[in-house]
Amino acid sequence: MISEGAGSLRVEVPADSLFGPENMPYGVFAPPDGEFRVGCRLGDMVLDLAALLDDSVFARADMNAFLAQGASRWREVREKLRSLADTALPVDAIYPVSSVRMALPVRIGDYVDFYASIDHATNLGRLFRPDSEPLLPNWRHLPVGYHGRAGTVVVSDTPVIRPQGQRQTDSGATDFGPSERLDIEAELGFVVGTGSTLGAPVTVDEFTSHVFGVALVNDWSARDIQAWEYQPLGPFLGKSFATSMSAWITPLAALTEARVPLPTQNPEPLPYLRGSDNFGLDIDLAVAWNGEVVSHPPYARMYWSPAQMLAHLTANGASIRPGDLYASGTISGPEPTQRGSFIELSWGGKEPIMVGSESRTFLADGDEVTITATAPGSTGRPIGLGAVSGRILAAHNTSRP
Image 1 (cartoon, rainbow, N blue to C red):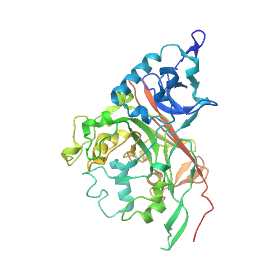
Image 2 (tube, rainbow, N blue to C red):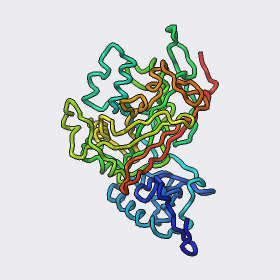
Image 3 (cartoon, helix red, strand yellow):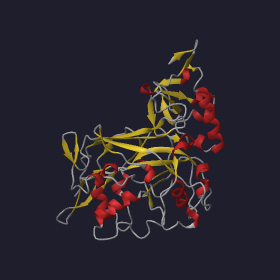
Image 4 (cartoon, rainbow, N blue to C red):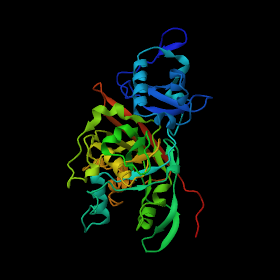
């Protein structure tokens, strides 16, 4: 911080910061002894937007009202904040990141999880159906997804209690108890800004007018519970116990330099999944298990684009609302060091991973997982996405017969 006279300070951003003026992600924070409100990150500081911009839409405990104002307003606010970043700011509108409490940045009405990585889908197909074609017949024709549980999406650093549920034992019997194959899924989430009308699909080329930004997501998975319950209707209790989301949402406007062409899609998608604004994102993730990086999933490898996922989500006329969240599904690459889940990294538990001095397959109580990511920035240096972390706590002592 540099003093610029009584009551004002200039935020000094280090040259190697991942959160310079070209980034400026949004979140919801509470200063010491204060109420939650919308803020913007600049370097190691949080800017109080209600105080800085004198706008009550930011004096709320979620971003939904701001998101609902639409893309032109998002651009206007971003341009204003970037112009203010190099000026002296009121001291009462600036707080160190280390001094504030963070909350879930949006009020999520609906949450959808996709399965958009061809490498992840291929790996799981080989694990679960070793004598069959890894990809099911529909996979290359549409973005496979399911509706998750919005009420259990939690902000980063919220502890995750080990879930309990039915499992099938090695002997073929059925029991109920804590998951023994607790896993992660390293994903990228997309936050809806502008809603749509029920019955009116959103096209691929309308993506940037409806989606505000991205956030890292860890969609925790109880693989043993999921394996027993998911046929024929799909994920349920093995997925709905917790989904962790970063406290910071990076606006799409900060990711212009990260846009890349999609991998070749064969067969060519149906017309409703085509468009001129169909792109992938060059975002590199890192998964740390108890502080040790074990994987580097590359988002640029994803088969289905964010715009195609939204177009398919709404193709039947389903509407979207400000604050809705949809996620990419596990991000994996073709190399073992690029797998975004532990079931892949350990190849179904058959190939343990060394985490420090311990040989591991799935998560133990007390384990902590942190996912971080970087993307190309407009100044030639990378920008950072807000980290998503969670620590596993022991299951509640509520076992039932």
